[in-house]
Amino acid sequence: MRIGGGIEKPYKNPEEWYPFIKELGYRAVLAPIDYLAHEDEKQAYLKCVREHDLVIGEVGVWRNIIALDDKERKIAVEYCTNQLALADELNANCCVNLTGSRGAIWDGFYEENYSTDTYALIVDSIREVIDFVKPTRTSYAIETMPWMIPDSPDDYLKLIHDVDRKAFGVHLDFVNMINCPKRYLFCDAFVEECFSKLGPYIKSIHGKDVIMDNAYTTLIHETMPGKGKINYQKVAKLCESLGPDTTLFVEHLPDFESYKQAAGFVREQAILAGINT
Image (tube, rainbow, N blue to C red; front, side, top):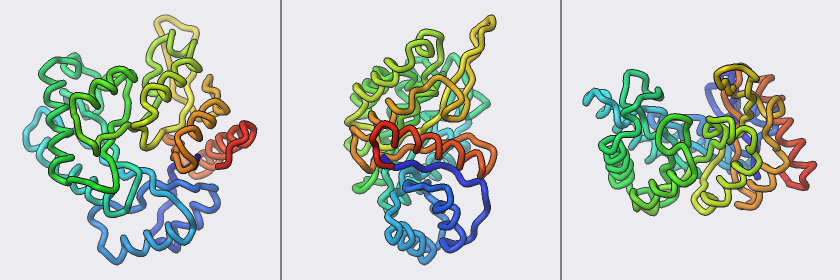
């Protein structure tokens, strides 16, 4: 497995970017540019990636391609297709997005997120993006979420079947799907279920942790690896079972030192499990 994550420090070129990657101990990286980068800039980062044996795990989108507003949706789809084309050019593991929401907040929770019409729109939108770009070296992947499709391994398998595109893969965020007490209490089994069912399709993974308050009603919080209930020795073994270049990214942390701490913990647990990171 390869560990990566955010940086939370500014950089202008590979010469400024790579020392941060090295200090953090990352062997997987998020795309350091977006599709607007000049060709020479893309090539400079690719040269740096190759020279230092890094894997670009993800090109992010984070736009609502099923937005209620047609103009917003059109802009989001255009950005998404451009980012997928960039991922293909960079030979990234995947280009990742959410399915999107049917409300004012692009990643918000709404009843309409689960309607039959929304599901049909999700399938059509994913096909639209993939069919426009026709990627050959990367996959378009959807991050699993707590309150929109797909929020379970079985829902993702159904989505894969219905989208029916070879270039459609899985971005696994098992913590996002720990959205009820049973999944929290039996999280080891749930994480194993995720890998067992989705393993052949997984392109990249988010590494976070989760903790539940003993309060009414249910309060489940995301936290950094090592501060919650997730067994990262198990996670490391499951990641490695998918192949040595499987990418796991720590995320949602406030600063460079937090990323260093989180990545260090995951690396330590992987070593304890006998896994090379």
